[in-house]
Image (cartoon, rainbow, N blue to C red):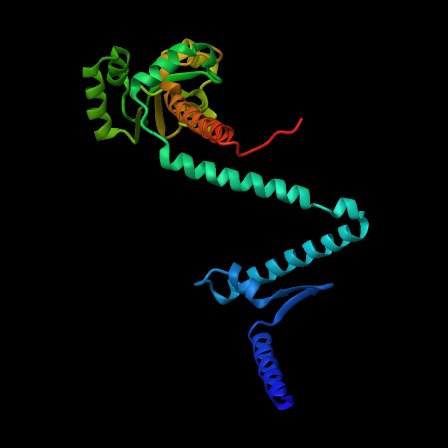
Length: 278
């Protein structure tokens, strides 16, 4: 019997030693130990040796710092302050509920939002949609300096479908850049980014003028502002359309969660699954 236990012990000890050899510690702070396997889980396959070593060094240093702070905290907090079981249980409960709600939503959420729904929401909530910045519908053209812009200006100011086609044909041949945003509203900040810094038009100019022209030593820049809406005024539907879609979907999610909670509660109430004591 004694020999049997000795053999079992030797087999266990040999296996333990092999495991320790295959998974050696790489850092230790007090009783906390970081093993090689912990590093391997965080280092992505395919990395070069130098990158792996650099990442491993960073991971080890962060781990050591965290353990040192942890031990300092354990020494300086009272037993009551170190007791986080209640907080952990609340976090666990919240996390499990959140995961279940997300799964429930994913299985049932209707993400199709019609144009009619979005327009109705916009009409019913006009007071909620004011512009945070001034916006405009624009055409922007960058030309070589030697190209004369007179004909382009005439077409821009005409502002009809035929002139848009002529501008596109002309710009395709000679322009370095042509930006036509169609019916999209563009913020003034984004419009300013089309120009070199020294030639950026002021917002006040863009709010009061249809056409802006500027040149530097190489290029000529033309900006036509078809329509402008100032900051603080009613936001155009097209400008907030995507936001409205997101709002409608968010409200659907909230309704699914509320219905889920209410249905579970009413079912439990009808089946006497809980008791509330006086």
